[in-house]
Length: 428
Image (cartoon, rainbow, N blue to C red; front, top):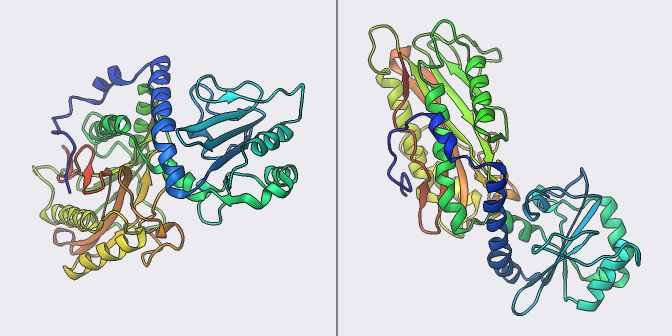
């Protein structure tokens, strides 16, 4: 395990990152370059790995398959009318066609003339000409990411293909592998996105934003949401902030909003940029008058959560399933007396992304289906968990120390892409 990819320098302030956020036109250049690379290098390998000769991705406007948005170039990230992408594995390449009125430039050759034939008629003709051994379609009972073909489109496809429909196979694994696998250029850029997420949290958890006795958790979360908008990145979920204080239970139905001295503050923040998502949880202590540090019990709680991260990282091995990783990590944590809970999810094109689910907060014995997917190299994760710890300074009240940190599985080790929280943020 490695705590960070690059040396983590003192954060100069969130607004200093504005110059790193590209204008829209430049984002398109970067994003489309990555997409072209992915289509030419990753997709052929994955089709061979899974054994799919032809892959169809079919979607209609406003009812998009979750995969198609990762296959289309900017600025055309959504289906128009009905968009059909066809991938055919040839010996030397993957042929990329769009059975669609316009095509997509160098990405997909347009092969349908609506003045000459109907859309599904054209698709059937093209498939017959290529005569593939199998035809992958996006249907799945397990993965939402592999189940993007709607019932209506499925019915039209089956009717159009006739006897060729016997060659149809589920492409769910191809969908997941395509979405979860990152290329070198994406992995080189990802740490900056995570670092920016940390910068937003660092400034939110400071006296620039928080005045004890005045500021509420709602104030802080709305500051985070506005800051992301101002920076030009897109929230994939609304940033949240909550607190625990001496005498407060972490699972109370009605939580106090007003931040007071002596409180432990927790956040959950993430955004999309360049087609990649971040997702981070960190914690902050509001100093009482006369204090210069958090109580030892709260610092021990953070140490326990860091130790759980270590057990999690040690359990990760290429080829192990999410459920196997979960069991090994929890067993090892329980052996040393931790009170652990792990609910890690893949991270990438989506926030709760494609890949092996490693626990859910309410399924600590494993997750049927999604937890059975194996760990693969060059995939990314939000290492999300908590450890409960009794704090002597709070009359041995149990505190839930929740952490979430974005990391890259290289195939050999887990790398936290911009370090991880080992000290509580402090607000005077």
